[in-house]
Image (cartoon, rainbow, N blue to C red; front, side, top):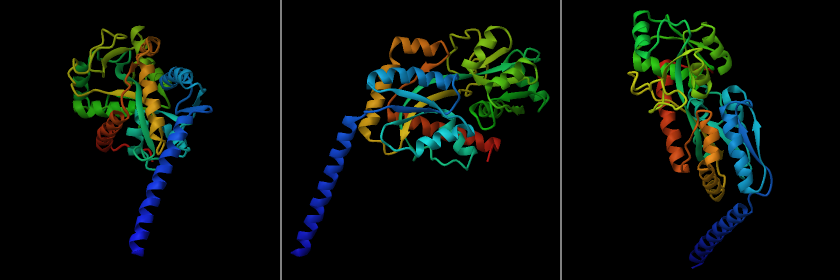
Length: 329
């Protein structure tokens, strides 16, 4: 009888404890936010990620009635920012603007990172995405993807392409193109998009893979040649540049997305509130207009759909990394 009574006591105690935890979490979420929220961005001010962060933070500040302050924390291929957020208290006061490469490429190429893309964060929603562009230098002896593939196969290793850094989406886009077309292109990495594009403008390299945001102005001004965009449809910013599928490389689809994540164990009601707000913000005409002017498209969705996107891209880019043998640590 004593044993039975003690068992009932344990069950009751466990139930009461769960109830108290539930009440505590709910009460905490109801009180949130009561102070300034930080939105960590893994790049310097001025780029696409920073632009997205500032547009959304402005609207989130209005909706949440508390300041949402952008904090630029660049370095280590976005690892510093990710590790900062992973180690932060899961209280809803530290948010992360996570680029695709941070969660889907970096873990494959850098074994020294101190975060897990699936265990360290709770996905909230994608925010925006931008396709990549394959461009050729002014003096490159090719004006189309068909020309490039034919010339590259005729002289393997002759054609060079610049990227914004080893192990980045710029780099892996080039490796994916090589794999899909059976070509051998020489990778020339730079520290950022600006020097990589300058090398293209100066004919120091033949090709470059970078975002529409970066390359569209150069192509529109006739400074470099646009060979293909990696979206499924042509971009309004470059209506005369064919999609990769139109150019003959059907599976060369690359989206550089940026999403919102929070530290793992952040209370579900806070994640749900943030998700609802960013979806609402993404529908605002002025937000769409500001993003589209930079070649960015709103891509908000549910936390579950975002988690699936992260997993799918992690596996896809893992295969590309394995094929290319890319490692930076």
